[in-house]
Image (tube, rainbow, N blue to C red):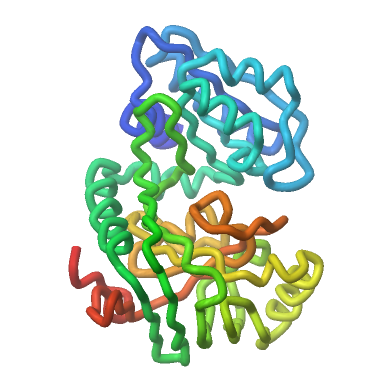
Length: 318
């Protein structure tokens, strides 16, 4: 318990920067009750006031919160939300940030993930992540290759990349925790090639067999593999054409993260890349969709504007 408490304290102090004159709100639900209470205990040591609020579990990620909860969220300085379903894309979260509240969302976080990832040095992660985001922001194109058959190219245009650093100390700032990724929304309709996902996939978990996705003109044209590929096909079919959009290219930057089957952690693993499908509107793109699913690529080689910056999972430029 001492190590879990220390991990929670890192989120409150190093990431959110909660001070002794602030009010901290912990939003929980039944599946996260045990972890939420540890956050509450850590918050009591740091904040002037710490509030623990439990909601009924939402059915899906992004399902809206009660209006009363939204009201409370706009009246506190900082929020930690270790809920079973993500609040990241809710109107309540966005309204709270507009009011100046700092928010950390930890959907589906487990004790193991906290122990691995929240004891990292987030100041170092922030520097590394920002450097990579700057490289992506200046780039016009990117290409990924792997030994098992990935060969895919992205047009990045003039879009700025984003840095998920885990440092959430400016009014209105927001991040998932654990953090550690630099990411960008590729230009719609321009991604071409084949990706072999061999790590994990959002909505599925750790992959027993690789999933091969062929992409034409920025959209998924075919999915093949084993039973997990069949499950992904069903997800895409339910989501419709927008769910097949290539929404994100991202780079993990957290050296403590491991592939666990929980995409919250998996997309942060240093030495991996991830490509997401579906909604890009919340990260600088143009496509709205009911899904946003990330797939993890292990040991990739990455070229940015024809300059190799990662070779078989090893960063060369940072």
